[in-house]
View 1 (cartoon, each protein chain N blue to C red):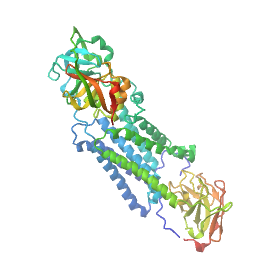
View 2: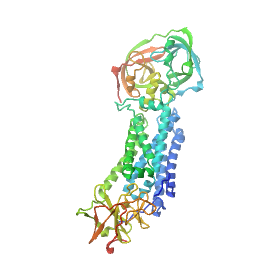
View 3: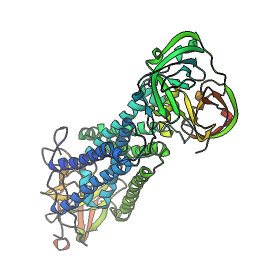
View 4: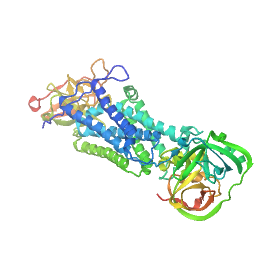
Length: 253
Length: 353
C-alpha cells in the first residue's frame, strides 16, 4: 500500500507550503509557552519577608561591653535613637569576612562600635564598619551581664546564619541557602535558631555549641533543615541563647 | 553541507529558527526579571541577584526540556523535523543561559568571603550523607560541565574530527545533564517552596520529556523498520508494490545496520540508512534533484554510489540488490562507501509514480 508522504523540509531550501502554517503555529506556541512559564514561575515566588540592610538609618555608633563567646556580642551601655541602651547586639564583619581574630583581647572591655543595622522583625544585627576598624577600644573595663539560665526546652525550627536571615540576603534561609549559611557561619557570623513557636516571647535565638562556645562544625549538617531539638536556654542581656545538645537534635523533614 | 569549516553556515531557515528561539528566551528573561516583581504582592523583595539567578536557571531548565522534546517529537511526527534542523544553536544558547545562572549564584552566595568563591562552592556544604540538605550544587556543576562540553563540541568540525559515532555518544551527555538538573532543582529550590507553582511546572516539564521518550520508543517498536527476512547472503526487504518514486523503504539488517532502498526514475538502488553527518535516517529522506536528501540536515548523496556530489566528500556504503518476482532482496554485505552499483529496473506496474 502506498502511503501519503508528509511535506519534506530541507533546511537550506524554502519551507514547503504545507508546513508553513504548522511551523508558524508551533513558533507561536513555543513563544507563548516561554511567556506563560516566565509569568507563572516568576510571579509565584515565595515572599522572603521584610528584611534587609537599613542604610536609610545611616551608620550607627554605640558604646558597650564586648563579649566574644560564643559570637561577638555588644551589650549596649550608651545607645542612640535606633539602638537603645540595654540592647544586646549581635555583630558581624562585612560580607562574610570574619571579625573574631582581634576581638578576644577586647573581651569584657568598653568599645565604641560603628556599623549598619540589618533587621528582620525583632531580629537585628550590626554589620561592623570596615571589619575591626569599626570597633574602637575605649581602654575601659566593662561589665558583661551575667547569664540567666531558663531551663531545658523542646523546640522545633531551623538553624540559619543570623546575617542572611536578618536581610543580608533575601531569601536568607532554607535548604537552598544552606551552603551560603555554612559559609557565613565559618566567618564567625552568629547562627540563629528560628523557632516555630515563640520562646519567652522571642522567635529568634542565638545558637551556641554544647560547651557554650561557637556552634560546632560537625553540626553544620543540620543548618537549613527543619529540626526538633532539646536544649538549654539562657538569657544574656536581652538576647536568648540556645545551647544545643548534639545528642538531642534531629531533622524531622 | 560544506567543504570547509566556517563558524555558521547561515541560511534563511536558521535565521528564522534562531529568531523564534531567541525571542522566546528574551521574552522569558525580560518578563521574569522586569515584569514579575511588580506582579508579586510580597511584603519583601527578593534580592536582584537571586531573582536573576532564578530567571536564568528556570529558563535553562525550560530550554533543556524543549531540546529533549524535539527528538522524540520528530520521531512521532515528521512535521517536527524542522525543530531538529538547528537544535544545536538552541543547545548553545542553553549553555550560555545556564552559565549566566551559575555566575549569579557564585557571585552572590559564594562571594563577599575571604575564601575563593569557586572553592567555597565546593567546601561550604559537605552534607553528602543526607538527602535533606544534600549539596545539590554538585548536580548543577555537573550539568553545567555537560552543557559546556556539548556546546563546545557542537560544531561540525568536532563531528568530523571525533567521528559521528563518538560525537553522538558524547552528545548523549544531554540526558545525564537533564537528570542532573532535575536532581539539582529537586534537592535545591523545590525543598524550600511554599508556593508550588514552579514545582508543578517543573514536574510537568520532566513528565512531558519522559513521556515523549517512552512514546517515541513504543512508536519505534511498533512502526520501526522491519527486520529483513533471513535468506543466506540475500535478505528480503519488501515487495515491489511497497516502493514509491523518490522515496525509500528501510530494513534492518542487524541490530546496528539498516539499509535504505530507493526508487529513482523507475530503478532501485540501496544505500546505508545512516547519514555520514550525524547518522540521520536517509531512508526517511527524499530524492531531490536526483540526490538522496537527509531529513535532518539536508546532506545529499548520489543514490547509485553513496557519494555526495562534488566538491563534497561525504560517502556512505552501498548495497547490491535484486528483484525476484515481486520481492526485493538486498545483499547483506555492504560495499565500501562510494562504490557504484548499477540500479536495478523495477517491474514498473508494481510501483507507484
